[in-house]
Structure formats: structure tokens, C-alpha cells
Image (tube, rainbow, N blue to C red):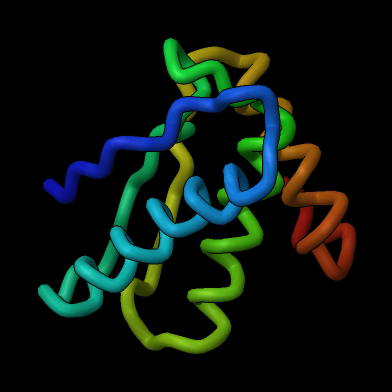
Length: 106
């Protein structure tokens, strides 16, 4: 288990997205360092820390996809969503920005 505390959103000011992205990048770096083949993430900071789900999904997926393009491990990364609404937002964001073909869509 790798635990990361996400940033508290304070209105969307400068640097907030970078702090959130760093949570994912740092966790992925630790996972690679320890030879983890898969990593499951919650939607960091979207609960009591107030990060809007759609913005968090964009930040999270961008950080994860950039990391996966440049590193061999982990081999699989999953987002664990606790509501269907959250899962829908993550699927839509992935499909919009990262699914290159219809077959790649979630």
C-alpha cells in the first residue's frame, strides 16, 4: 500500500493542479521503485478536500498517462471510483483525451 495525502483545494489557484498531479507521479515512482506491477488509485482530493471530480480526473489521467508513456512499471494502473458518477467522469475523460480508436474506449 502506498498512501498519499492529496492537496486541499482552495479555489483552483495557481499550482493546485501541479500539487495533485505530483501525488500521482510520486506514488507511481514509489510503485516502480518497489517493483509493483499494478497500482490502484482512488480519486485523490475529491472528497472532503473539495477538488471537483471532472478537474481531478483530467489531472489524474494526464499524470498517469504521461508516466506510463515513459516508464515500464507499473504495467497496470486502475482508478477505483466509489460512485457510478465518478466512474462515468473518469471514463468520459479517458475516452476524450486518450482513446485513440473506438476499440480503446472505456
